[in-house]
Length: 175
Image (cartoon, rainbow, N blue to C red; front, top):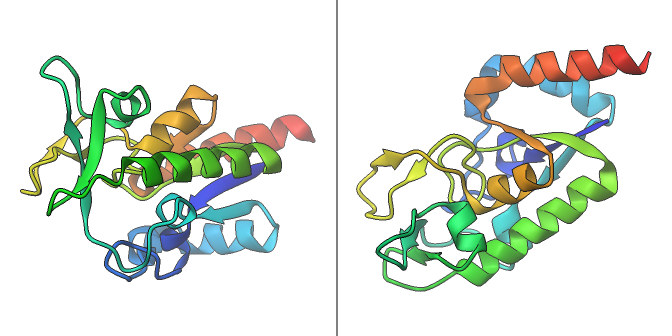
């Protein structure tokens, strides 16, 4: 059993601003260190895997149709796009990164993913609304949506206790 993890949560400086995001999992650091030593963690940054540089401009999911919801599922179906603040469309890179993250998860047999919150890639329980105003809306990022579509449960750092319970349940059933 493996867990896909946003590389920024493991201290890798791959966020859009060139920083790490490991302070978001400070409360879970001991368990993450144990899982890493046990070889359970598979780090990935979908945005970097999709060909985007670090640092890179911030990007958000925007609607491309009056009837569509702007989230990762809509991007995967072509009903929304991911743009930088200056209007550059980076949807293709985000979708490619999501596909590569899914391939890694499947290759390693990942059953769950611990993903950075609010990201247009990794957001598992909320994303920014596409206005670059800091407003959060319900929805998933592209990678989180694709992973969930393939049966890989996605968790944010705030949901770490739920992830830990799932890992314990699966580990217990494998004994």
